[in-house]
Amino acid sequence: MELSELKSQWNEVLFALESRNRVAWLTFFDARLASLDDSNLKLDFSDSEKFSGGHSYADSRTKFSPILQEVILDITGKNLEISW
Image (cartoon, rainbow, N blue to C red):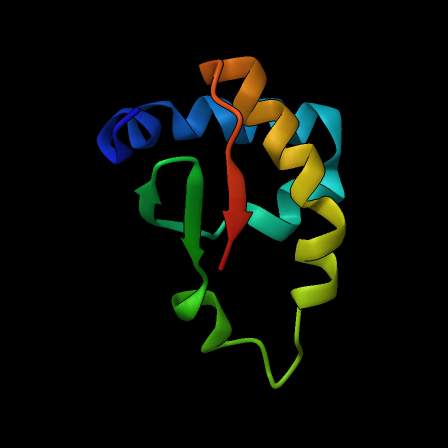
């Protein structure tokens, strides 16, 4: 799978994520898809972190990454590891 393919399906991924778990959606809705190498999807949160007020959302991202992985697998058929 190419990054452009995943980007074209990203809104579908986000809609499915929101229907499965709204807090997980809130954790990832503002992520940018930075790169996709083999089975590793790297997300970029640099834009949203400008406004975070010093809060770290790493714990939430770690907690909800498995749900995002499941949704991506359901939509694309690809099992991707998530990093940021």
